[in-house]
Every structure is written in C-alpha cells, then in structure tokens.
Amino acid sequence: DHKETYFSGLSSNKYGILVTKYCGYEFLIVIHKDSTMNELHRHIELETGNAKFSLYVGSDKLPRSDDLLSNYIFRLRNQKLISPIYKMPDPVVYRIMIDDGHKH
Image 1 (cartoon, rainbow, N blue to C red):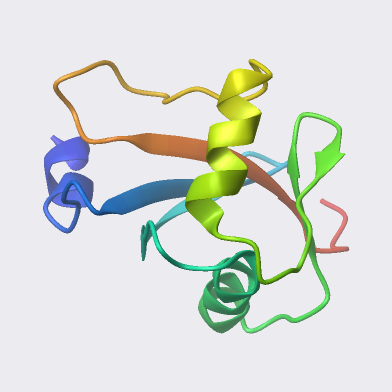
Image 2 (cartoon, rainbow, N blue to C red; image 1 turned 180 degrees about the vertical axis):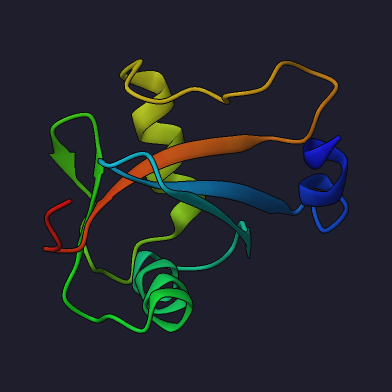
C-alpha cells in the first residue's frame, strides 16, 4: 500500500502535505509542525526546482511569511477550509494545491 510508504516518515510532530497540481500530479512532503510558511515554500521550491509558484487551500493563497505552519493550519481548520485527507488513526496529511505556472 502506497500510504504505508508515505506515512513511514510521519510522526506526531510532523505534517504530511500532499502538494497537488491542478492537472492531478501530486507529491508528498513531510515537514515539521514548527516550520514557518516561508520554510514550507522553500521545501516545495527545492522539491520542484521552481521558485515561481503559488500555494492554495481552496481560493485562499498561502502566504510566504514567518508565521508558523501549525498556526496557519489551525486557523484554516477553525474556518473549515482544510481537514486531513485520511481518517484516524492514519497520520495527519493535508492537501494543498500548487499553481506553478505550467499549463497542461
């Protein structure tokens, strides 16, 4: 099962972020909950080799800032804009969309 492979790097102090392009391509990153929004963007930049992208949850663009990722996710959850894509007891994985400027 591919979820078992993905989940092997997750622990209670990390999030799984399933980064999904609008064409359907997706990849998983594992990031510490104490990371900043800037660090999230940098992690994705390194993964994609592209610095010119935007991240979205619904129509909300995720900012590049020094705010903690965990605080931002907490706010999105309270606003019912994001929820884990897998059910407990699986580790917490959130889906965010990426617009990297490439049209498919």
